Length: 221
Length: 221
DNA sequence: AAAAAAACATTCACGACTGTTTTTTTGTTT
DNA sequence: AAACAAAAAAACAGTCGTGAATGTTTTTTT
Image (cartoon, rainbow over all chains, first blue to last red; front, side, top):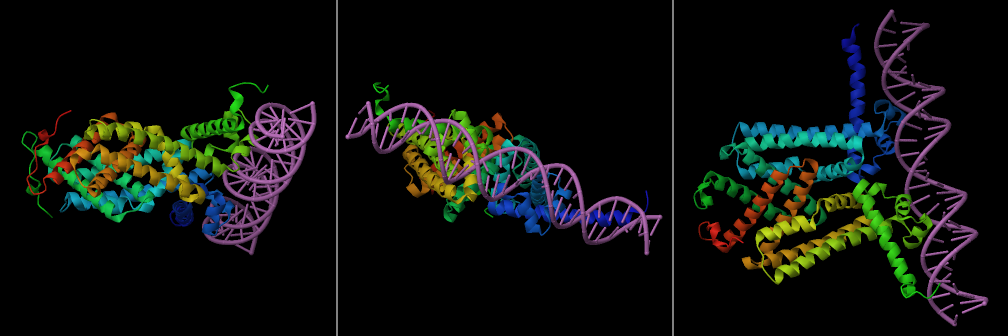
């Protein structure tokens, strides 16, 4: 154990930077032309390094893909957590919740990458294990965010989790639909319908025995 | 032996039967281990024929994949059309509509196959073109089904199309979510919420100026 | 029964990708 | 400055998938 602090950091940092570049290149290729195209050669070329150098940092392709996926979703998770903090410290309404989730957490390019990896993970067992683990963790972040964002509803957590799952499912499906057949107007209308559904659900849960409450009870933003 | 009544139809039927077997094998492999694994060798082996024979019927791998996709979704489309006829000739309620769509049209194994092909189609331009065309057509079948199934609501078509898109998006997203983290209870709860959302939307559109109508106005099946 | 056409089978050539091994370069320690 | 280890590059071997070329059997036609 010698004077590690500076020296080791230097090397490690360099290695970390290299790995970050490799992951970035991998992610770009996945987003542009799919996971299958993210071969060792392609990634190394985009990075401007040799394949040998790459293999030094990521011994196998699976290692590279998994680490890329992990960091990719880690970023998404960070966004969710930050939003959760924002929302906890201030104002929150259903529309903000839904739109934040849709715009910030599910940008369209992220979805295609996600689908690519999910599909790949279905067959490649090692990748599949990692992907599933990451996605479960991410979903829990969604739940935390949702619980905080919808805390004013004062609904029990189980009830909120249903709403959250509903929301996430609809948003993901909407991204897919818009990917197949883009239609901004319809997209907006569906988002409106989702928001109304959530508000209505909250209102109904708050007044279970009564008749349908008027939606105007809620503050209209 | 040229005298069998059964064989009389000859090459065309035989060729069609062969192609059907090849498509079936391809579809099975896609469902089990993914599109990437559906190589010429794998498909031919599962069929018990040689690769040469396969190449005779499908000159390239893309041809095989595209034709398999076409028939795969054609079957889904037939289901939707048949359901649309059923619903047009008889009873229909929102729950039946949603559950039919979810159970009959989006069986879970169909979804993974669909995702596989959609993801593949994103990069393989020829396959992508075909997939997009097929899916657009399928979605129009969804719309026809939805318009008929929800005809009692007497809503204008544009309004119905929003509801339909909303429904399809949520169902697809729910399949994905259930694929990542299965939870039957939550799945059922989300479906219930979806049904309630649609009913509420219909009710709100039917009485735009009035207060929220009581849901008991609808007949309870 | 013979010719023609389709179906089927076998083999080969080419390229791509993965992962291993070997060599060179770079930078740190003594 | 020299020794040394890590990083980077290059060369290598093995596997796999595709598609083409060629040969064989079966079925239809005449």
